[in-house]
Length: 423
Image (cartoon, rainbow, N blue to C red):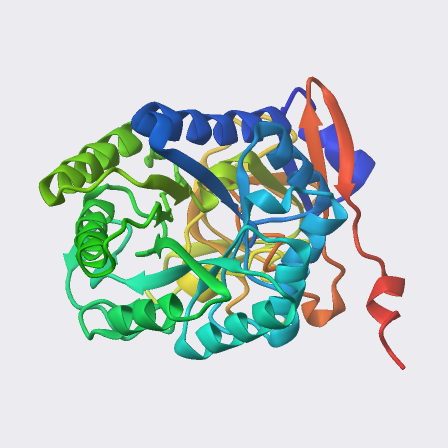
């Protein structure tokens, strides 16, 4: 059951593969991050920005507006979704390391609150377009604080070899500050930093905050005024497997607030407005992918062991993460219970690629076979948004469930959709 609706009913009505999003869970997680930021920083709480890249459609954008949080977009297409849903541009932040002139123009014309500048060329582009449009555009500078964070470890090092942002250590950040400050059509409102994704501790965020606050103090000393905002990014981890735990918003933000307040006090700074970007932590755990099993096959390995291959009706076209990152997922048989013994199983897709693997190794019931439904949890982030039409397979539908009712929010593509762009 998902949101009070059985997997069998969902598959029968909407088909598979199918993304099923628990609407109440989405609202609960979005609200928890909003409330945790306010609880940790009080009147210095800025905005919780939802990562549009994780999964975005008009209905999701409407939900964000109801909760009262912001939206982080990084392309003209993501901005178009926000505009189509009448999302308040006052709560939109635009990222991207290579924003085109047309995307910058669209953002400024739409009244996007903040553009996060990522390069010296962008300083010139945003400044010139804002001037042409007769506007002063509010901007952040994306900074590289020399902190690299991974899922299970934290490394404090000069991590400069990335495509994003201005390096603090090399002096690029300070040069960018000077260039933006001298541009009459740009208003420097603060700094932004993002140290990684799927992070399960707060040490990396704390280290980044220390460096950014030190730069805020340097700015204060040079320009005789304080910048009002600081966006500390996010990338908070979620559970994909049964033995993992998703970060609790109140815990991580309370720890972060303690560091920010202490560092500001040490530098004699007022605490700026603090914004965050939880990333996949809002939508990731809310969604389950349903697949139908098509075939099974037993393969004898070199050591004589047997591996069961279970093929489903989707794969790398609706979840590329296992192929890209060796991402791990869990699965259960969703249409029935089974008392059969488990066997070493590999869940694979239907694409013409040996790397089309959904789950590399899992113990599944030996009687799992054609017609069974497999449920893969925690696919809300990057499943549908990174989906492709490889092998000319239509992308799956997205269904929202709540209080025992299911409704379509993104329809399944058809073969006609796939042919519609052909000339």
